[in-house]
Structure formats: C-alpha cells, structure tokens
Length: 330
Picture 1 (cartoon, rainbow, N blue to C red):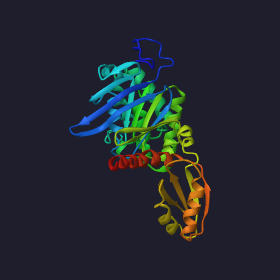
Picture 2: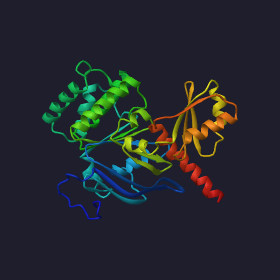
Picture 3: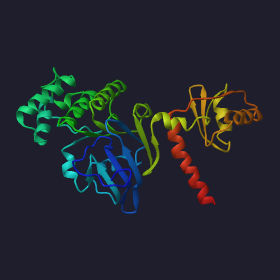
C-alpha cells in the first residue's frame, strides 16, 4: 500500500515509492514481544540506520523485512513486494550481511566469491566479470588466492560486503556489520556503503555505535521492540535544543552526585573533566542547575550545549522508562 492506503501495482514505476514500508510490525516468541507495532518507511538510495542496544529487536525486525522470519502481525512491503508472501522473489533483489561474516574460511578470496555467484545462479562468464570488478573495487588484487580464514577482521569484512553485493542488489541489509573490526576498518567500510548508496542501492544498517548512526541519512531507534524515534540526525537532535547542558566543575564527581537528584534530569554523564546533563524538557535548564549547585556549595560553570545523537538515544529510552514508572505509580 502507498501512503494513501492504495495498493501498489506490481510492475508500477517505483520512482518515489519507498524501498521498505512496514505498518504495525510485531513479533512474539511465546510470552516475549520482541517487536511491538513498529511502523517504518525507508526511502530509496538512502543509508537508513537502525540504532539500539542488544536485545532491542533490530535483528528480529531485519529478518522479518527480508522474509526470513514470519511476523506475528503487521504488513510489510519491500521493493513493491508483499512479505512474506513474495519473499522468494525478493531474495533475488536483496543482499544480506551479518556481523559474523558468512565466509568459508578454508576457501580463498576468489573461491568465496565464485561460490556466492553460483548460489545466486549468475552465469559463469557474467560471474567472472563481476568478480573481477569486485576484486578491484574492494582491493583484493594481491589476495585472490589467500584463504579467507587467514585474513584480518577488516579484510574479512570487505570480502563479506563484496559477497553481499555480488548480484548488484537493489536493497542491502547489514546487521551489526562493524562490531568486530577496528575503527579504521569501520571508517573505510562506511565509505563503501556511501558508494553503494550513490549508485542507487538502499541500505538498512543496524548498529549500536553513535558515530555510525550520525553518518546515516535517517535513523530509527528501537527500545525493547518499540520504535521510539525516527528521523534525520539533524531533526532528532534539533528536538532536544534547550535540554542539554555542559557543567565544568573542579570536583565533577561531587557535582554529578548533586545533579542526578534534580527532578527532570534524565542523565548526568562525565566526559573528561566536564559533565553533560540531559533534561526531560526544554526551558532554562542551565539556570536551574546553577541554583542547585550553588545551594550545594559547588563551584561550576554551567552553559547550554549542542545536543548529539547520544542525547537523543538517552532521551528516547530513559525518558520512556520514567514515563512508565509514573504510569505505574499513578
């Protein structure tokens, strides 16, 4: 269905249609609700980030979107196909990469790519040409005969990505793809992802790294199966203007102990010699904190600060916890 509720015709021009649309998506495992009524819209040729801690429902959602897991409730449409009913047709048009890097470690770099091309039923001549392209693009010219099991984490990551895009997918799912590599490899990996997006591929990337989330065109934050935030990084941080404050104090731990008791303060995190404070509402937060610190006899410089995605995450998750606590107490 489109945004007006009309059914999308198969074969219709996809221009303007999102790559993924899910409504009321839920998944239960017995008494556990892993995903709870999630609505998602992922634009085409975007890098869309899924942010959340382990156990938040990111992997379960991705598996439902690509047809590997049947939802308990909800409607899913991916690349114009209804899922899970048309999951088999979808698999020919998507790529999937997990944090475990699905490689055969006793095969060489080229043998891994040849095997994946065969699994995708790519004709031999076409596969040879495509593998040559990937070997050059992902810098494996001198490593084609190297066993995958002998490579570094970053090299395995690049090989896994090359394998995931061997059939030139329209949509690529990446589930925690950078959790096992060093920062430099992560940076290089993200450059590859933006190359794919620039070429028209849509990417849905799950992560728990804030710096990676900031790179995405749009992000969604999941908390215990519930979608608690969705928008561009600029939109989401903009909603917190006036709620973040920096505190510079000679005794930051003492200042922190005083501030965590203040009503309306969601978090007080020490960063080096300063404190970063997040409040649950806007207003003159800095003035309130100055008054609290002065009454406690604590010298400090207090000033508004620019919100970041970590603040967005804390606000969306911890603020939800406080709301739930208030409801139970009411």
